[in-house]
Length: 236
Image (cartoon, rainbow, N blue to C red; front, side, top):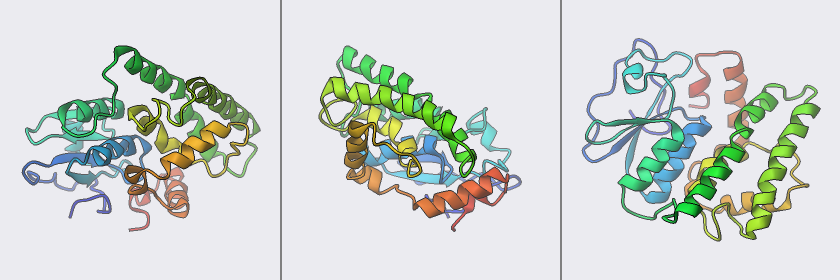
């Protein structure tokens, strides 16, 4: 069985055979925000795919042939070509497949999206530290995250648009979104435009299709912090 809700493959398990013709294969972890970037772009562009879940706490040996760093996501196209690193997979999908273009053609607008991406790059490690310390004193981390959110708020204020790339949803929104889905424990009252952006994202069909219940996400994270081999399959 393959697919987003299939159990993950671990050490000692065989590599999957050749996938269905014409499908892009995604090596994934159900709860991974980096993989979610790739899945969001696949959804937004309507690209048919086969999802193979990997157990990151107990990686199968053959997976290092797909990505030498052993990380997800990794894409394998129908020609057997491999692409990895989440932002690179997203750009590849946008350029290689037909359908709605998510990256702007204009070089300046594209550069603007990359600058926002750099601006947002401090959020994932801070948020991970925050989630690790939940129920402990996180005031310092909250303050640091607040600074990062304020900088993103400034971008939206200057652009006077709902989304980071303009009046409609584009690549940069999908690249940033997976971490904001996990912010129930943080107060965003000081960043009203960021809150409006989050509300708009929650109405997008590509986003809705990949939402995970907060309780399920927390169950995974609790097991993950214990280095449990069962974490990746939580809830199945």
